[in-house]
Image (cartoon, rainbow, N blue to C red):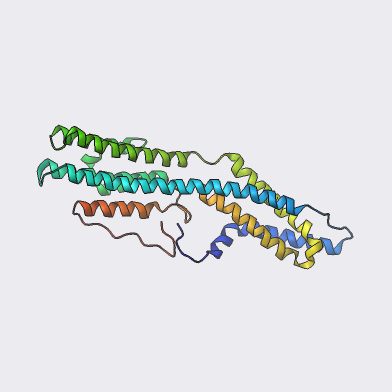
Length: 296
């Protein structure tokens, strides 16, 4: 996620420069043809075309932003639920040594491993290194053999809570409270997977691209009589605005990718790891810092 206040103009140009370069060459060709041939440029209702296209692209961009913001909201809920399950484990499972201390530590570390595995799954990365970093082989069990590693880790956490109840470390009411937090975690994960696995309809992706490029092709034809030799500049600036708006929708469609525009999953997982490790008195890493104005 870009967190710098200054607009990244270079990044915008980098993402659309190929199409913009082709548009500029087309603008120059139309301008040269206009001045070297007896044909006159036709009058095109560019205002009507541009208005309709702007509404279309704006609606698409709003839909993409809603997906991005929902993804950020779901991860905010995940942060809160992770803190809640750690707090409940520490408060409910009392005792300084033996099974009590072991189960508290295990539940907290499993939650950290869970969010790290979920991050990797959403980014289509291998979660095994993060899981092995936080849990030993005996504690991992068969989680890494499952299709949904994060869900396997959550199931294991539920079994540890049930183990604490059987050992008499918590009662059924406390177990129910902790299970309710696990339900909130599972619901958040389900929402994230829905966003990841359900892209925008193909019409939302293909039609705006087609009509935007068609508009950019017609733009110099309709402007050359009014702008003359300045047509490539005027058409290029207008085209850049439409292409940039189109690109914004593409960037925000998948909030859990691994690009500069996506939700900063690594930073949020690090926040969870810091808070939970400190809660059980273990050494915690430092928060992730932005790299060149980008928080991953």
